[in-house]
Length: 287
Image (cartoon, rainbow, N blue to C red; front, side):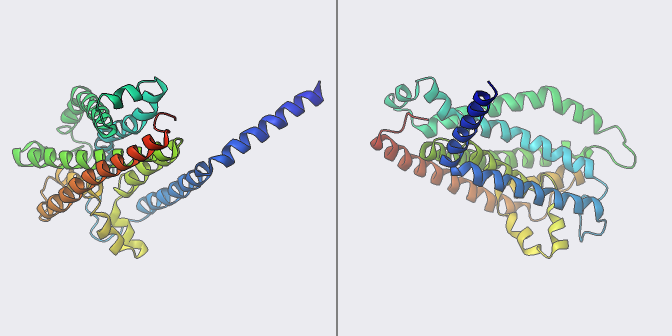
């Protein structure tokens, strides 16, 4: 009996290892996840340990810094995850072929799911989260408040809406682009979620990008602001925490808006190419 149990266990282990080796992409993404985690929390530890970061805009506002980041990414994380999952989900239901034969492109399918998820998340934030933030904005917490009272000015509200729209366009493009990995590799879930995690990390969600200067990476900090989620989150924090519209915000909006639109059209183009190739090879409906 013991020998049989050992044999079954050994065979099962070998089988699982063979499956894992077949999908080598999982090994690569696991290593990447580990590396990103280590690097991310290295920087986070540097923020906590260091109090002399040059031109650190949010000194004394770490709680507010994290609150704005969480609210910002809550809007897009769920939409992204739902968007990249919609193709495998529809294929599992046997509906993907029907959808395609009715002239609905995969980009349309993803955009619809992304939009509906954004609406659901936004309603949840507006109904449950923002009222709490609104109340806390007028409750002193030590020497600071949770958010700057001036955020309710028409100018800042308008800019906030514009920044969210630009971020939405960019993340929709990223979602469609990431979904092409599903069409090509089929089992690409870890890679698509790694992409989302990288964008979140590079946006300064976990730590202020100013900390890069202490590592001699000031040039990298400037480059990262060309990623729309990074530039938009930086601008949102400046407005909602400090209560000021950065002098460079118009330039950031124009550059990041242009990048977002270009990326969206590029993602749609790539998805069309990948879809035609998968349909021609007969693998479009298999995931």
